[in-house]
Amino acid sequence: MMPLEHIEEELRKAVQSRRYREVERLLVVYCDAARARFQSLAPSDPGAREIQRAVEQLLEWTGRMLRAGRESIALELNRLPRVKHYLQTPPVPVSTWHVEG
Image (tube, rainbow, N blue to C red; front, top):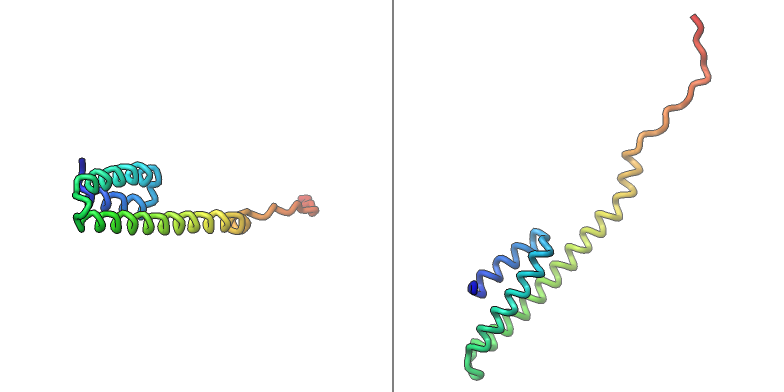
């Protein structure tokens, strides 16, 4: 199993680059690794509290970043109709003039 810190780094990169399937997979791997490390410690070990705090902070950060990314995508989608309006070419007027020559 990869070290917890390495998984966290990969997870942060996936979140920042909006690779959502990878985020989901890495969250499961991270939580499993954190649980395994937590269970390997004695209940009185101060490292257990550190692991708990690190997991909570990472999950909080991940949630905030995912919400911000989703909001950013929603804003871009809301802009599409306005952009599309400007990209449409106006219809060519039909001329009623007739040239004889």
